[in-house]
Image (cartoon, rainbow over all chains, first blue to last red; front, top):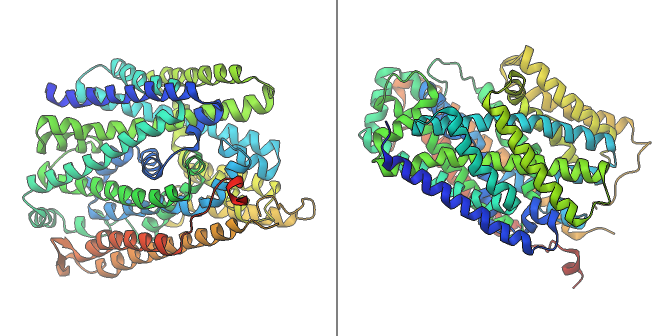
Length: 482
Length: 87
């Protein structure tokens, strides 16, 4: 049985998150533009908030639970791989950059699909993108939700259903009533807990292990491969590890839940500050958590299930109350990813489907009602699916990250920077990117020793260029973004 | 009519691409340049194998310093609303 001192900080954390939701709701009532406020927080985010919401959305349970578990078996090579994520802190904001933010304001875009709609003027693109976002991110959300509930289950000893209920209630309430502002503000708290928790646990682990030199010596004594870049079994080739830069460093530009944040900040100063804070924070978390996984090996040898490494280590090396605070970090990481996905899927349904194709002339009051209901229904549907996840959802979740990257990255980047990009190219790249990613993941996951996302990104690039050039006579060059 | 702000934005996007290439080169170069020998012959810095120290620790600190420098030196403040631009 876990000590009540461990559970207390977790409960305090949930109460704090809850109060932020209520406060954000009062701001929502005062706002004169509901859609912009509910789905983008009124484009008022400053540098710290922007950085934290970026890294909290990006960092999920896998950064705190899954990743350290793999590092535990693979050694320092996996920390090297994890550091390919550093660009997530600066690359997205620099590449989408000020042009994306300016255009988003000028055309009053609320979602990533709004941007694609204005740029490519194609219903097929809007519908296909909306479908991809709803299907993939709904699955991804369900999987994260299951992870969050399992975490509470293992920390408190409650049943899975009770744990799921606590997790769902705490996330749903603040997202539904507070919208994006609540999501961003809670992300700031959650992101801070993630960074501070990482540092505390790293220090605690080094002390418990008797210092870095002692830990390294016992790793070498067990298996010298653990301290090479190639992994304990020597299976991490430079090519394979390098292709992770495409998945987790660069392709992130195409993730709708990340890209939408690049249209929600206040001014260019906020962006500059966010790049610095975000890069430091993401570097600290990814380096710290994965190194902790490796260092756990001499302290707690023989753990069979990777996901248990981080919780067990925390309870072993830290006093109970501090352990509770540190264990709030993976919970914060899960919540902050789930809440971003929930508000994004809801915005896709309301803004991209309902207001485009069902009822364009809807009044402000009815938009409000529809938004609250949509968010609630999606949230409850996720909980229902998470009770007993259908295998289709589990299967789709595997493709969510790479599938969306391969689908969107070129349409967004070329849409911004190349006049000659047109709807035929964008459509071709989306279809080719998504289908080739799913096909390669199923039939040929380590194609030529690379990560499965590499070739689909290349294929969708080629499809984009070839189709745009082949059809350049049919479509006028796009000059509105000049 | 060309929007001057977009020229600044284009340049900054290219700087972002340049930074990723530098980041990748440091990361890859130190990791596999120093780490490919037999672990028995590794040298250590502050308790860490040298490849690991330079690639993931010093490299990251260097990147953060470089990013701060580039932001202060080359990134420009531009207004986001069209109204402010006309003032």
